[in-house]
Length: 279
Image 1: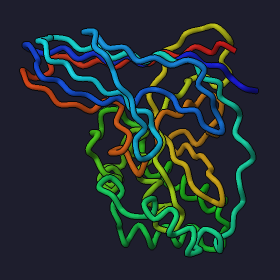
Image 2 (image 1 turned 90 degrees about the horizontal axis):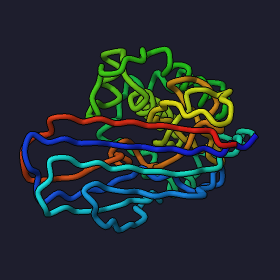
Image 3 (image 1 turned 90 degrees about the vertical axis):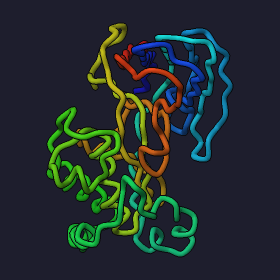
Image 4 (image 1 turned 60 degrees about the vertical axis):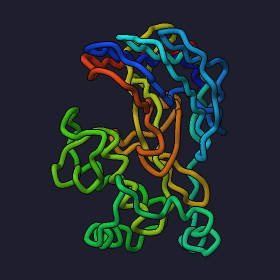
């Protein structure tokens, strides 16, 4: 059953002193995709400033703004209403299609190592061992199960700069780390895979009307002849409670807010995500 979801994502920065010459890019508005349709979306900034928008290389909507007047607080709020459909049956593609020269050329950027998803010969051997004798759909599921078993979910254990291999060594992490590690394993066996950021409603059986505290979330799309979404953090289907915001090679391509400014350090940072099922 299709869900209609209202999302509010608010990020507040409070500085120790006045900030000047602030330039920012934000990726916090949901996308219209084959699985979801954005009905309303707006990004507002305090102090008030005009935003301009563009679509980045990966198809994500980016809002940009700059502030030149002194300010001690910056608040960025994204409000949206999105209809999200249940996922279609997953595609059971073939290794021949996935490893074909056409696929490798088409998705070369989603097969290459990155800072967050580095090449690792030992993990590549492990990945090949795990998928031996499995068809691609089962192989992707087995790699996700392996990832889930190797990391304990622990907020604060890692930072936004932590790579997949660093998180694995610690054995702990958050959704970003689960996604990066699964990307490494999928790419090691030649499956193109991309990082997805968005929002996750915490109650898959939520009723209509209640506003709940939710969270930003990350999961993975694996190309198995078509895109198949996998949530390695929860090992639950990516369904009507998942709202897609951005996609790319890894977290570096999808940060919710990225900016520079002149002034004193940030004294307080707060992020709040609220979701309401409307239908």
